[in-house]
Length: 386
Image (tube, rainbow, N blue to C red; front, top):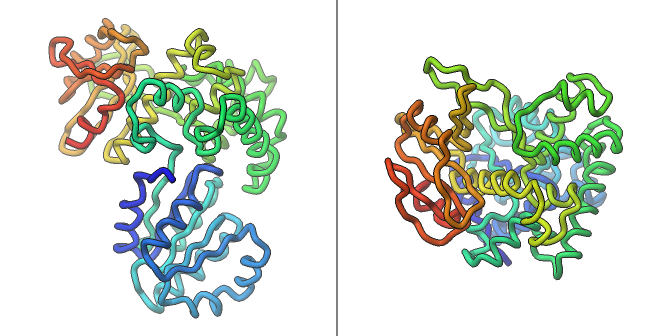
């Protein structure tokens, strides 16, 4: 069992809110984490809405759930029954108590909106990401490279071999397209979305250009944007917004697009091993996206996340905007001896961040000059939680 770093935050939220939502991609470990939380809490009831027997118990949900008013009720796959949200609200208003419900769900375009409308002021959300470097509890190069290559989905990372891991990811992609998305109400042909997903893999880490991608697929730009939104809503894609600084510079306005799990990226590109990955042209962009996910998971939503780029060539891979005007800047390098780029120096002069780092796959933290430090990815917590 790998301990998930989100567990303490979930338990704390259950002490403060009547309803806690746990969202994330399918197969990311939500159910396992919920069962761990249930054991910590003690008296808990678990309902999986994919099981006909559990779904049948909620034929009259108000009557059934009233009997469990003194327990934590965990409802898995809540997106299958969005009509439950008003029922939960009425039960909470009738008997207000924190820690009454823990609801689990894969995102659908309407899930957050429906819950927010029905449970405003009563619910807080947490997102469970795939395994992070901190969770696998090692900074050894071999394990770090395995996590980068296979990605953080438990079924992929914990597979007995690289070939088994690759098979798992291929099956996940097909299941997501053929079963999960239709179950969420998505009406896009699986073959079309697979082509779009593969194309995004080739454009991983680049600026979003809807017209170019749409022309390659033979669809309209709004259709391509709809495909992108679908993968973003289901936690497959991250759209990183450009930083809009109030300076007299011509700023890039298009977002950058990354596949959130590096293992799925590599499966879509048919990359099977670390050796194959290091020799592939996507290696640098893949490392950049993987490190961004590690940083944002470690940050825990304390910051707004952006990238910075100007027409003149200034560029910072990741900018974290924190409270009280504190700003952190990161350049990401797949190199054992990283050196800051000219674009980074220009970007730092524009933004004047509180601290700046070059993240790299090493073990030693050391200064690079002019307020910039080389920082191993494994030491991200040291600067994000200080």
